[in-house]
Image 1 (tube, one colour):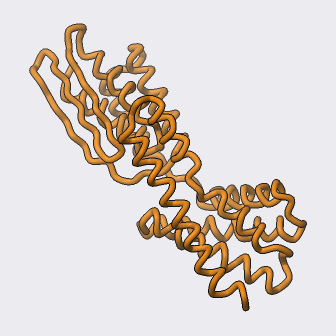
Image 2 (image 1 turned 180 degrees about the vertical axis):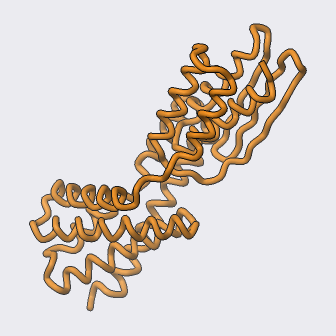
Image 3 (image 1 turned 30 degrees about the horizontal axis):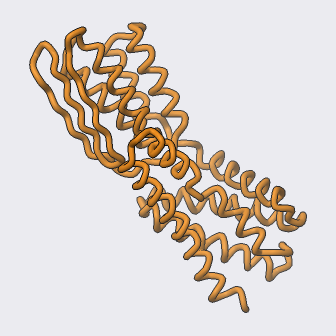
Length: 251
């Protein structure tokens, strides 16, 4: 088995898991299992941080080390499931190394979620959160409308590579502006409830949950950094909402 290809498979698989929202332990475990197929006497190590992957494989051809810088990703359960299935099939011998590498490339090139489905999903999420906090019928409908607009704005911001934190800040402002406008034209009764419902889909709940799992697994650097990231996202959203309310809510 080609050690360089095997190390590439391990690192690329780890990158996909990490960028898709997987916790550090899952990344290191997957990489270690893949590298362990090199030979019975091979030595291997995988060290993963939120922004970098370090992997070393000492096989029959000597020691090989690979370092990869990881940039901001987004939660993608479809890619997580696909890479998990691929790694299990490879480790169990159901697919060859070349087939596994091709699978990884296919997973990397998976199409993004349909923008219409994404926007509708955000809209339905906002609508049901408004229902959960006992909003009026007008509030529920307004939340769905704002959620639809929010989904479209988020797609535009993503395509223009706007910073993650700036994107959440702008999203908070957009939600507040639309909620106040709908309130002024009597399409919603309580704009505070509408804003509360509509910020729910953009909060970093998964990031905070993953950070807690990392901390419980002993990966304190990753856990703390992700907790800070989740907190900063919440602060960015709050600032966007607060600025709009301070300027326009009294009009």
